[in-house]
Length: 449
Ligand SMILES: [Zn+2]
Image 1 (cartoon, rainbow, N blue to C red):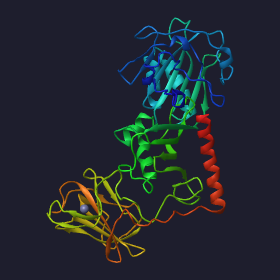
Image 2 (cartoon, rainbow, N blue to C red):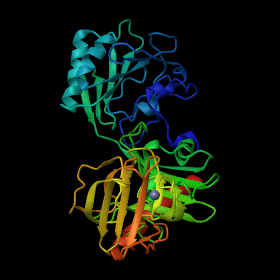
Image 3 (cartoon, rainbow, N blue to C red):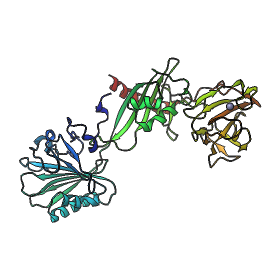
Image 4 (cartoon, rainbow, N blue to C red):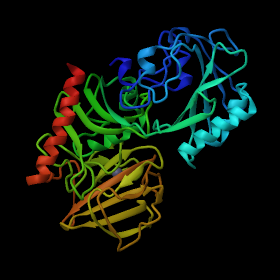
C-alpha cells in the first residue's frame, strides 16, 4: 500500500517528509485553510520549549516566510483577507484554548490584539476542553507582527476562524466538526516469526492485531495452523478530520486468512440491538458453542492421549491438552456455563471447573490466579475470563494451561469435539448485513483495483 491511505498531519512527522507540503489540501465542506508558501515549507523545526510551540521556518530558528495568497483558495474562506496581502504562517499546538492568548503574545502580537483575537475565538467556541491547533497568519509586509487571520481547531476540525476586519477589530466564525471515515486495507504474508510482527510489517495498526486474531478464534489456532507464506488481509475504518488526521481508534471491519489448508474471510457486523460480531460472507456467525482453545495465541505442547508423564514418571492418559503461554495470559470460558468450583488442588493447582448447558464439563488447571469474579454458582458467558495462565500445582513443569473436556463423565480430546456451525442471520438483519458486506467489499475493490 502507498502512503496515501494514511497521511500524517502530526507536525512531528513532517520532519521526515521534506518533499511534501505540510499544509493540507483544502476540503470543500470545511473552512479552507489558506495554502501559503507550501513550497517554502520544506524544513520544519520542532521547538521543544514552553508550551510545545512549533515554529515553521525556512531558515532555522524563528522567522517568517512570505508567499502570495492563492486567490482561488482564499475565495472559499468565510472572511477572505485581501488577496493582495502577503501572509506568513505559524502553527502552534496548545494544550487548551486558554493558552491561545499567551501563544499570540509569544508570537509578537501587541497585547491588546492578542487579547481581542483570543477573546473572539473563545466567544465563538465557548468553554470546551481539548488540544488546539492554532494557525496564525501574519501580515508579512508589516514591520511588527500583525494578525490577519487565526484558525483555532480541535482534533475533529471544529473550532473558529478569526479574521481582521476593515475597522481593525476581529470577527470570529465557528467551524463545525468535519469528520469523515477512511477505509484502509492492509495485506501481508506470515513471516517466520509470528503473526504480530507479520501484521505490523504489513501496516496493520497494532491495536487491531489482537482483534484480528480473536475474530479467528473459532477457526484457526494461530500457533499451530499458521505458517510462513500464509496470506492475511485486514480492512479497517478510521475517522479522520478535515486535515486527514486520525481521530479516535480505528475499527477492524474485515479479516481474512488463507493457509494451505483453508481460507476464511470475516466481516464485522452489529445486528440491530445486538453485540457486534464476526460473520462469514453469507451472514453466518463464526461463534460456535465451544471454542477450540480457551487461550489466545497458545502453543499446544502436549495433545490428548497416552503419554509418559514428565512429573509422575509413568505412562498414563493425558486427559486434556496442554497450552503453553506466558504467565498471566488470559484464559476464557470456552462456552457459556456455570462455575462448579474454583479452588486450589494439589496436582492441578488453581483449577476452575465449568458445567455447560449441554451437560459437558470443562476444566482449567494450573492457573496463576483466579479472575476476581469467579465463584461457584456464577453464570458465565462464553469468553468470560477465568484467570491467567500459571504454573501452580505439583503436576506441571512450566507455565501452561491443561484443558479438559468431559462428556458424560469421560475425558474427551478437546481438539476433536464436534463444533456445529454458527447461527445464520435472517430476514431484515441479513439484508442489513449484506449492505455492510457490500460496502466493505466495494472499498476493498477500490483499493485493489
Ligand atoms: Zn496436561
